[in-house]
Image (cartoon, rainbow, N blue to C red; front, side, top):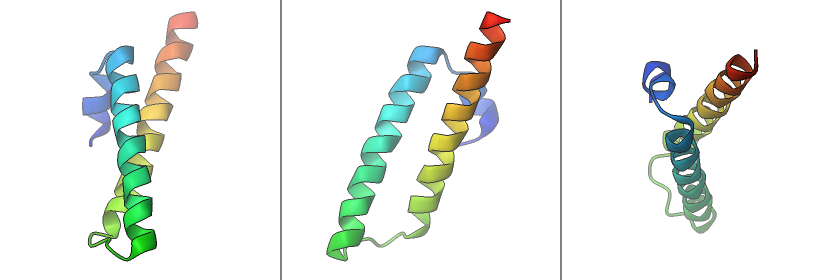
Length: 66
C-alpha cells in the first residue's frame, strides 16, 4: 500500500482498512505459531501498512484542528 493511496482515503475508510489489517496481522501470528506461515515478509508489510495508516490518520486529525 502506497502513502498516496492512504492519503486519498476518508477517515472512515482509514478505520476500516486499519481494522482489516489488524485482523490479518492476528491471523498471520496464528499461522506463524502453528508453523503454517509461508510468506514471512507479509508480517513486516502489514506492520508497516498499519503504521502508515496511523501516521496519516494522525496527520489528518492534526490538520483539521489547526
